[in-house]
Every structure is written in C-alpha cells, then in structure tokens.
Amino acid sequence: MTAPLTVDNLLTLLDQISPFSQAEAWDNVGLMVGDPAREVNGILLALDPTEELLAECHAHHCNTLITHHPLIFHPLQNICLNQPQGRLVARAIELRLNIIACHTNLDVIPDGVSGILARRLGIAPGSPIQATGPEAADTGFGRWGRLPAPVPGRSFLDQLAKLLRLESLQVAGPLPETISTVAVCGGSGSDLVRLAAELGADIYISAEIKHAAARWAETRGFCVVDAGHYYSENLVVSQLAATLEQRLATLGQKVPLKISRTQKSPFKAYCYQPSSAE
Image 1: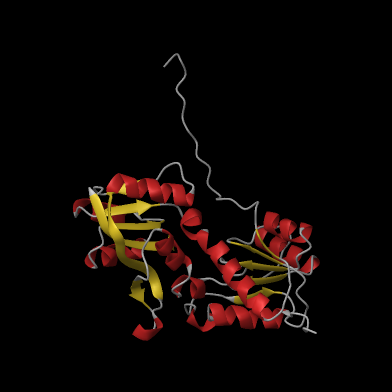
Image 2: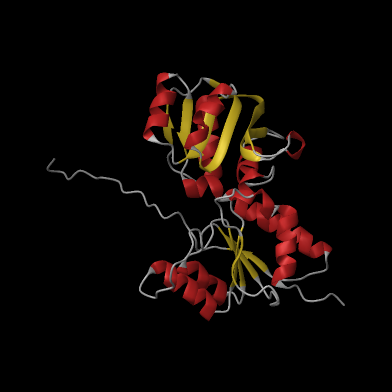
C-alpha cells in the first residue's frame, strides 16, 4: 500500500523537477505557508496567489496550492488583517492550506517558463539567452533558437497571438518579412532585449518591456514583442501540472491535481468608442 503523500514529499518531487537551489538569491521559493508533515489531499496550480485562488482551492477540496509567483516575496514585518498581504496569509492559515512557490527556479530550467513558450512556438531544443549554470545544465533565463523553417512575420505574430489567446500584441521595431531565429523570455524580460539582438534573433518575445528598451530596439531595427506578463508565463502552469502528474503516477499516488480555471490576467482592455457627435 502506498503511503500518503505529505507536503514534504511534494516538495521533494518539485525539487527534482525544478530545483529550488537554482532560484535567484533574491527570490523566495518553496513552502510559503503550511506544514511539511501534513498529508496532501489535492493540488491546485496557478500563477498568482490571490484571495480568489485560495477560495477556488478550498472549493475543490484541495489543501495544497502551487503557484509560480510567491505568496511571500519580501520579508513580512507584520500580518495585519487590514492589509491585502496580511489577509491573504491569515486566510491561508485559516483554511489550513499549504502554499508552495516555484518562481525563478521554474524560470531557468529547460522545460520551464521560457522553455515551454519556445517549444510551443516551434523552437526545440533551444538554448538559454542568459545562462545561470554550467553549460551542461542548460539552465538560464530566456530561450532562443531556430524555427524548423522560416515563417512570414505576420503569420508568426498570428501564431503567437493564437497560442497565448491574445487579441493584440505590442510590437516595437520593424517586423521582419520572414522569421527564422526567435528569442523568448516569459515574464519580465526587458533586460534581455540587447542580449537577444546580439545572439542574432530576428524577433524577441517577452513582457514588461521598458520604454527605453523598446526605443533601443526601434532605433536598431530589432523587433520586440510585449505579450504581457501573465500570458507569456501562463503556459508553464499546464506544463508543470503534466510533469507533476506523471511523477505522482509513477509513485502510485492518486492525489487529485487541478489547474485553476478562474485565474485571469489582472489587466483588462478598455476600448474607446467615440460618440456619434464626435
């Protein structure tokens, strides 16, 4: 008979998939709230730990939540219920939830945030834009590589928008007629714009591109696409869920595992509609 899965067992599995030791020094990963000895009766995965997500987790009778962004990023000086952060931590404790974060450790692995985005766009295996470990480890921020065959620029953007379920994309610099080499960095990747250009990419896809970086790309004829933080990272949730599900099955564990169906980007599009009098 298979022993129950504990939070500590789950942390070990996640460490095998995406080693916590590979997180950046400034990051906070691992168990945010919970009890390592507690039995896991259900797992919910999402990008952001929010009050709505805690409610969804509780409604699904899952006592464990795995998010990309950490519940506690900066050291807590207090837990006050009149503050959003305090309410979130208190509510998690009240519901007896275990909350685990896989942040930059999930960014840098080959099958992580940028790796899954690159692969879904046809770049395989690809290489890190900014390596963070030994060359053999193939770890680092962003991924870049060549497509199997050149693709017309507009067709490539259509493919990207369809993949990320976006109605629009922000583009700086001229869109190449054809695209052969692509660089991506899911999440905030403004700092990698120049590196992507130096590597010879035809186009760079990321999010939270700073104005100065966009201008730099524009003046050098380099195409940069801002696809939004949430959308450029969200593919990794299903990827992590699938990998974790396989590992659990191998161990004979039948813990229910779900992906959030309620979480969305915090941004909404506002479209101005002139009145007939204008």
